[in-house]
Length: 290
Image (tube, rainbow, N blue to C red):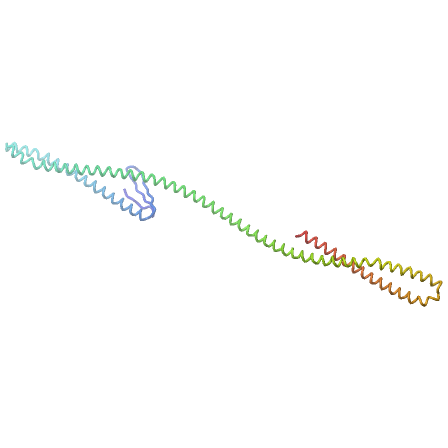
């Protein structure tokens, strides 16, 4: 198996016998590098242990073959010599050497079996951690997708709120402008009300003056009656014509003068009344608009 870095924080390796690809994710590139180095060390140690076990197995098989070959020769030598001491002298060192080699092989096999069990445990642990990491990676991917959706929703909500804030700011500015216009209109209304009060005062004065008009009219009627009486008396009193002619002319002149003044006064009063009506209509129209 060969460990391959597929990215800065992820690596994987394949088990051809199990037809499985394993992958691990790390929080940093340094941890990934350390894991790759340790993976290579374990791989080299496994290879060395396998080579040593194979060498020891070959050595043991060679020794067994040599022992098998030496046994007939020693038997033949003993049969030739015909003594037990010679047999013991030939067979004893070979058995001791084979026993020592067998003991060494047993120890090596025991160690290799323990290493194999330890590596199996480590492999099982790595598989379990890989399964947990795969599940965590899938969960993190689902969480990332969920966060992306939430982020898009938050962005849309943020854009909507910004648009709402812009609309509210525009409405606030419009309200401020309306307040300014209302303030100006209030000031204008106050000015117009003061003018209306002035006009009403003038109107009251004109009304008071108009109350004098009936008196003037009565005086005019009285003068007319007096004139008529004077004319009737003129028929009877021709002698008094000269003296009364001056009075009549003066009274006519005064009457004409009063009529002119009365006419001008009435014209002025009509103009004032029309202007006041126009002013009231404009004021009512302005109040309705505001």
